[in-house]
Image (cartoon, rainbow, N blue to C red; front, side):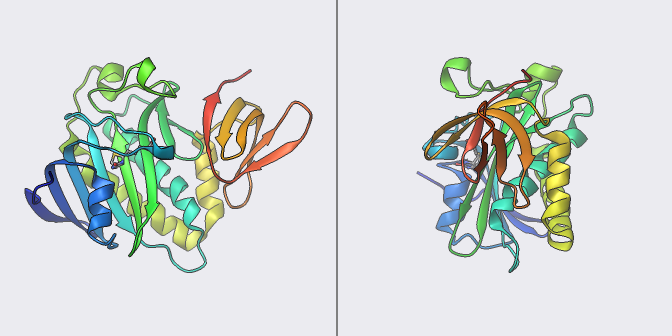
Length: 248
Ligand code: BTN
């Protein structure tokens, strides 16, 4: 059962509603009409949603938040994935200077090749809900996840409190979104590639029509994933996710 927010406050451009616990911050944003300029955070979630219908385990101690944004006419909403992933990367790099996060297509954030943050973007009545989960103090074990996971406590030995994440994350998102709106896709995709897979990396992607395995060949101008398979055929993946990434 959800409660009323324990706190509502303004952070930059966002009206933030903070809860002790929720079924999920994406669910709460959707119930409230997905109004751009709102954000929802929770100390824990009882039914956190992950990509592809998966569950996102949400014990207290990690960050769970959703912000709602709109997409100007002429911009491709699918590129919010790159905007959000870069915002999380910026935020983590600012909070924990000793790590170098990387990106897994389209919008997972990794540290030392393990997933530290996940992003779920959903279209809503009034805007796009960008749900972000960051493993600060705990992460699911190998039997519970499709891709190996880790958390910042395990990596750095330091406890980062969820409360310290919100403001840098919102400002990083606004900076990246502003740049995307001003300069278009090219800049955001170039920045994504600087922290993403390296050309030639062996990757496997899961798509609606099956699994594609081959060498990472870059992104097309909209951000679709390009994979060259062993037969020399190029695959253009617009929806799905990378489920394996290596360098041989
Ligand atoms: C993924 O599968 O990688 C995406 C995970 C997204 C989890 C976050 S936690 C905050 C927000 N609320 C949800 O129910 N899911 C997202």
